[in-house]
Every structure is written in C-alpha cells, then in structure tokens.
Length: 591
Image 1 (tube, one colour):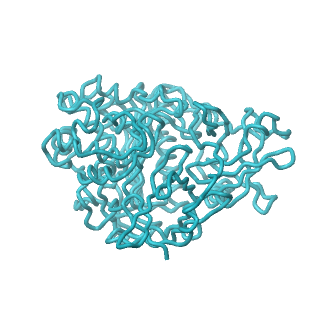
Image 2 (cartoon, rainbow, N blue to C red):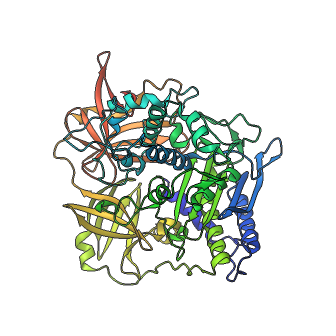
Image 3 (cartoon, rainbow, N blue to C red):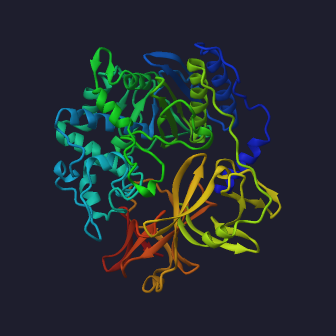
C-alpha cells in the first residue's frame, strides 16, 4: 500500500551525504569502535526521520557492554531518553509469553503438542472442512491458521479482557489449515496467554511478573494494556507530536513495557542456557527448543524459519552472515518501535527501542549494524560486502515469459502480470512495474516515474522473483539473498459474482463503539472480474489498499492473502432486518 512513498523516501536518502560508514577494521576485544559507529548512526537516523528518542543496549554474554539513551523520552519536558527509559516494546512481548509457556511445559502443566481445547474447552473456531486440531505449539510458531487479529476491540480506551478471545475467535473461521504456512497471528499468542492464565490459576500479568520478570531482575518491566504509570515511561510520538497511547486488549502479544537495561537481562538468560541471578529460569533444553527451527517440514514456507517465539530468518541488508543462527523479534505498537537480535553461538545481543512511528526501519537498521560490528570486535568475523544484483540488458528468458503472466493474489492485493513486447509488466497498487533480468538469473522489479525516471526502490528493489509449483499451486516467491518467502498464488476470476454484485458500494462501520477510527473509507468494488475490498485509512488517506474477496457462497467470501484457497472470512449477516458485512467482529452497512 505504501510502496511508492517508500521508494521515493529511499531515493531521497540514497542521494543524501552524511550517512556513516561501518569501519572496515576493528580491534579485537574492543567495543569502542562499535559504540562510536552506532552512536553516529543513531544520531544520523534520528535527525533524518525524525525520531525524538532511542535507547540501545549491547550485550556480550553476561555483561552489558554499552547501554545508552539518545534524544528525549519527553520532548516538551526535556526528559532525556536513557537506558532505563520504559517503552512499549510491542511484539517482543511474544518472546516472554512463549518463554513462560515453556516454563509451564517443564512443570508438566502444559503439553505444547496437545490441542488448545485441552486447556481452553470453549475454544472452537469454525472450519469449512475437517482438519486437525490446533496445538499450542502451532500458536507459538504462527502456524495455527487463525486470523491475524480480532480487530474489534483490539485498541480501545477501556479494552475488554483478552480472555474473551476464547469465545470471540470461536465465532470466526480459521484462515488456513494448521501448519499450512506461516501466518502471523497476534490472536494466537493472546490465546497462549490465556492458556497460561488457566494453567497457572493466576491473571496473566501477575503470572508473568512472578514467574519471569522478577526472577530475571526486570523490576521496572510489566505487562499492561497501556503505558506504564512509572515516571520512567516514554511518551509516544508521531514524528515530533506527542500522541496518547491507546490501550490494547491482546496483552500477551504486545503489552510489555520495558527498558533496554531490563531486556538485556533476558538476552543474558538466553546466553546462559536459561540461568539468571543464580536461578534456572528455563531449562537449557527449553532454550534450545525455542531457538530450533520449527517449520522445516512446511513446503509453503520455503526456507523461511521460525522458532518458538523467535524469528530465525532475516532479509537483505539486515542479514548477519557467518555468525551462526540469528534469532530476533521486532515490535510495533502505537507510536513505539523495537528490535531485539541475538547471536546465540557467540553470545552477543542488541536491543533498540524507539518512541516514534518514524522509527519503523531505524531500530532494525541500528540493531543489525551494531551487532555486525560487535561480532567483528568479539570474533574477527567480518561481514561480506553487500552486493545488490545488477540489471542485465537482455531479453527475458522464454521460460519466464511463459511462467509469470497471470493474476496473483498477494498480501498487497491483486497483482496482474502481462507480457509487454518482449518483456513483462506488473500492475500493482495502482502502479505499473517492469520485470527485468538480474545478474543472478532472477527477475527483479523496476519502476520508472513518469516512464523514464528509474527509482531506487530500496528494500523492495532487493527482491528477486521466483515462480514455482508446490502441491498443485502456481506460486510466486520472493528471494533476497538466500532467503525465500511466499508472496502469492496465481488465480483466475470467479465465474459468477452474483449475488455479491448487488452489494457493491461504500460502507460504514455500525458498531465501532469506543474503538479508535482507523478506516477513512471502506468500499466493495469490482475490478478486472474480481470482487475487491478497498480500504483507505486516516493515517494514509491518499492510499487505498485493495484486497481480493473470493466468494465461497452467497453469504461468505474469503479475504485473500498469499493463497487462493484460504484467508479471513467476510460474512453477510442481517441485523434488524438490514444486511451488513461482518469481519473480525465489526459490522458495516452499505451507505
């Protein structure tokens, strides 16, 4: 949805002077150059975005090598950011929720390979055909097939208890079969938190404090629906404007407030095989299991790897080479952004927290660049120079001209690929892109503004495209370096859109309640023979996301993502005799 603004941003940045260069040589055992480079990089990125405040901590095994804050936790009151400043860390919370689940597994109170219903008898999501029961492990690895979110009530000034998701999700259809492919789900991790509550007989936040945070010495950290009342809590900013943090319901998925100092203790526990402060917080085999790739037998995941809680794959310039496994997680909630990376083999880790929505890419870049140089300082291992495959001035291969044309459902909506002379063009997000041959043999994406100004697409320009048939599906994969991920599947328009055609038009949500308004406009439209849900948001009013709705009956349609035979369900219901669309807890009436 934001492809062109992102591309323009990277085009501007590419032409700007002053970006720091990572030192080519580093003294072994000396982190001073790492600190100096990271400081320069943070100050550069904060000025460019802008980002009011950032905190960072670098950890070598049981030692915090460096921890510092930059900028302000509160701009108006001139309160500086520090290593003890508290931030909303978003999805880094999931690492803690899954760690607590492993603690209960060690105690015999949870078997993560048992169906969720073993612990939550009221959990019964709908399916269209028989399928295996969802296990706790599948919740933890984002392979449950559940919807990403239950949007109704996700953010609310007075959120309902997340425990009610057990019943709410039973009103929803699963989006995919369990273990079909990686499909990120906040709702799934919230259910893990609910299992913790039931099996510990303790409210989630209280259990996390007692079982994990306090034993780790994370005395300033806490799980909550909103920002911590502590005076150490940072404000959140939209650029440089302070924005009140709207509380969230799904606390296990994103409700942790923490500092880089406290999060350093968690990383040190991982490096010590579960020990912290003289206590065995987690057994060594449990730490190893969380870091073990869990999805190697899932064909649609290609070589993308995920552990229990941990992400084990990274892309492009974020990739850290020759240092063994790289485990990480990021976070994005409200105006806060976060990134935590560890190299378990070398017992090195870094966490970066930011207090602005403009820190989206900043925290990840700072974290990975810092860790790369720290790895060199500790071990002498240098990173290979990043080489973006160049364009080859040649006609596209005949095989590509045969394989690629068609319509594709993707996470970004409909992508239409057509032959154009001796080449290929893709229509996506309202723009036209050229497919070009790259020096590595893959096809890449090129965009020419006004037809002749070729833009630097930044991370998007790093993507190589691969067409492959898997289990009878004609699939599109992206490849960056050696990493592949599923992008989409080739589809054809449905034969008949009736009776959905009579429902085309603009819609308004009728049960928003006190939830913040996110959508500026919602429309049901027909384009290129497909039923589409078009949504523009208040934060990005000039951009419209168009997602394919594939009818499966007169009253139900799938909101397609990367697969043609799966997706979240949009239903037609009648409320007081009036037909409305139902999706993720919301109701919308035609205007």
